[in-house]
Length: 255
Image 1 (tube, rainbow, N blue to C red):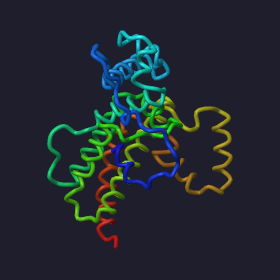
Image 2 (image 1 turned 60 degrees about the vertical axis):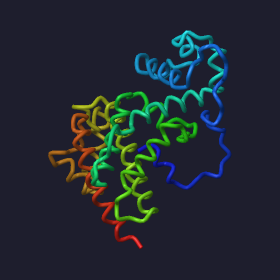
Image 3 (image 1 turned 180 degrees about the horizontal axis):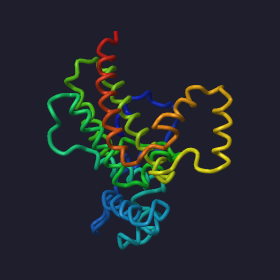
Image 4 (image 1 turned 30 degrees about the horizontal axis):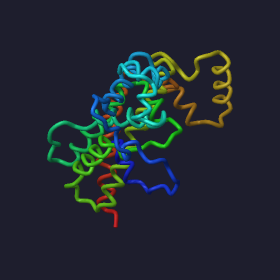
């Protein structure tokens, strides 16, 4: 769902022109392509982590000099944009979408999530990076076109369709970030109260009577245990169904 960000209001900040708006270097000798550069960078990140992706290392993987690479991309932000667009390309659903718009939208959302789960480092490195995301790349545009196709038959106004795409987009990325945080805490068996000082503090607050709902939660089977990473897939599906059905129904009645 990455490209549904195009549906949001356009920022008035001046941003650098995307790498795709510049022609690729011409010449008679065999040359690199932006797809090759993105693939090499992805392979490095998958094997050694995002921090290992440097212009020098990408150039070496392609059998080129670093300065040669700068003929194709001018900055590290250009490289990140190519990587981002390559992952978005993996999010494009191959073949035809289901005829039912709810099923089509759910499939697009699942595919987007799976694309980033295939590159776990990308959730933190790309989705949370400070540089503005550029979604005008060829894959970003293809994916946004597919998002629009998914809801084309929904009985909604154009604005309501864009709103729904944005809502589902927010959910997919929010779920990815949440899952990354759960994995970072160690997953199964990790609790909020994972040390004696924290336990003592929490118990004192619960005993104060000021937090009755938290106290009741602490006595329930769910308790204060962290989410189980093994349940993330099922939780994603439950939430996706609720959002598409609920938001779709709500937007149907929107004036």
